[in-house]
Amino acid sequence: MHYRNHLEAVYCISGMGSIEDLQAEEVHVVRPGIIYALDKHDAHLLCAETELILVCVFNPPLAGSEVHDETGAYPLDSEAI
Image 1 (cartoon, helix red, strand yellow):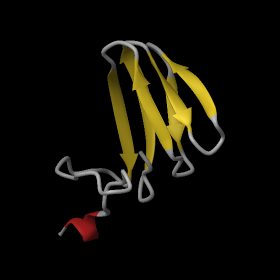
Image 2 (tube, helix red, strand yellow):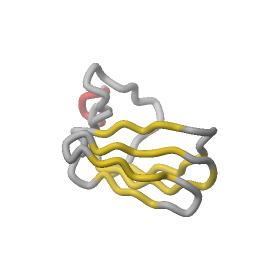
Image 3 (cartoon, one colour):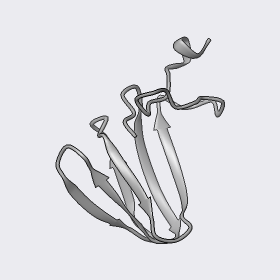
Image 4 (cartoon, rainbow, N blue to C red):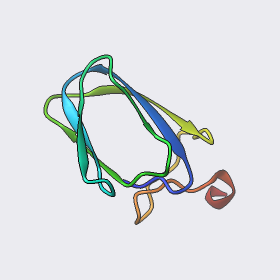
């Protein structure tokens, strides 16, 4: 995924997995209590080892009806209309 129009912060409530920063080629563990921020429009890959329950916050906010485009991004509100 690559949110070219949005920044994202994620909090892990439960489960185990990893987030890979595709540009830096770094992998970070995701487990309960971990927060990660995609604050540079980071291209990334989220892998679940078990079922993950995550809280995600986007800026600008999402309406909930957005669909990933071919690049993995969400459109801006003006593009969705």
